[in-house]
Amino acid sequence: MSGLKALSVVSEIYPLIKTGGLADVAGALPGALASHEVEMRTVVPGYPSVMAALDEHETVVELAELWGGRARVLAARAKGLDLFVVDAPHLYARPGNPYHAPDGTDWQDNPYRFAALCWVAAQIGLGSVPAFVPQVVHLHDWQTGLTAAHLTYDGRRRPGIVITIHNLAFQGQYPSSMLQGLGLPWYSFGMDGVEYYGNIGFLKAGLQFADRITTVSPTYAHEILSPECGMGMEGLLKARSSVLSGILNGIDDTVWNPATDPLLPVHYSAAEPLGRLAAKAALRKRFLLDDKAQGPIFGVVSRLSDQKGLDMVLEALDTILAVDGQFVLLGSGDKELTAGFHRAASVHPGRIGCVIGYDEALAHLIQAGSDALLVPSRFEPCGLTQLCALRYGAVPIVTRVGGLADTIIDANEMAIDAGVGTGLVVAPTTTEALEESILRAARLYADVPTWQKIVRAAMKCDVSWTRSAGRYAKLYRDLVKERTP
Ligand code: ADP
Ligand code: GLC
Image (cartoon, rainbow, N blue to C red; front, side, top):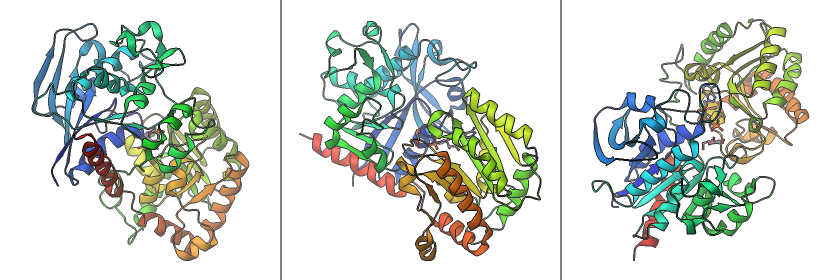
């Protein structure tokens, strides 16, 4: 098998910059693909944290003008990743996260910041760095969608294009008056181009021009063809369904490994699970929870947004208290949810704790020290926290949507007997069903051998990238073969 060169294009990448699972996937995939003889390099914006992390680097492209300032493209290595970094301080050298200022408001020039990323990525895709001419360009989410338009409109022979939808809720739509400013030709503004309901659609462009569309679970690939989940894109997705498929995410099992995790007080494994008790004690200490509660500790690690269904958790807190359980939350986002969880923690000290913010180390401790992890999403393209929970032995309690449905097997009686039940599946997506699942979890938890059986089954699951990296590699190879004259 000969090596295949693939260029990944993304707006965030772990461990350099992360707001969610997108960064985890972008960071883990290149390493996982290496064993399938795919050489992947990733184009990312030169945010301050990216620039600060670069080891060796060299300038491979100089640009006198890129959306209002000078820029360079650096070929670089950082934290084991092979990158092309778009060093354009006027666009990316800012505090805050990739999309927002520190006060939470979107950067006004986001369309131009990501248009610049797309334009540079397309140039590399078309061969502007002779040392690395990709056969496949793999785009992720709306921020990178225009790359597909540039690659196609250029007219030269282009690499194969794959776009992965990590979340259809974000589509990158901007007024048609920006067409020229975004570097797009006049003729691109049509239904078969970048036009989307009278606007310019970044994601639309990606979906229109890609040779393959993937999303991050088979169930989400199916769900997004319906008006309920397609968020307006269902028509286009249906028209392109012959090239649409779902490939499940994995997690980086070197970062998420309780047997070696430097962020845990004591290491443990499925065979030697006692270390979970030390993690539980540390978790209680961290959240100032008492150690008298007899019920399970329910944990949450999440963005606080409507997608994640945490308003239902807020409503179900009384049920957790009624089973003598405890609750810990780490998250950031929505102001109302933040206020709600703060209020609950102040009314029930010792039983409910919350930390608002982003804290990698605490996320690991919650996975190791909680008995169950709540993920009651309204929709979930894949979800990674339930995979981390499986690996760390926190029994996932999830709604039956998207990747949650594809990764968790409900611990009903038959599944428990067969030793394959790995979590609790909540259906339908309602507070009442969530409350019932909390009651069921508490009953199962009280039956120690049964609970241990579920924890063991969870920890035995293969949540690594092994299987899915093979699927991406095959997708790339098929595409290259199909495009070879
Ligand atoms: P999404 O990408 O929709 O937010 P995922 O479950 O795919 O959801 O990925 C979320 C990732 O972000 C996981 O790696 C999770 O551990 C991490 N995460 C989410 N919120 C926080 C937080 N407040 N602090 C630390 N890590 C977080
Ligand atoms: C998105 C989705 C999440 C998925 C992640 C990585 O943020 O919300 O479900 O796991 O992308 O693909």
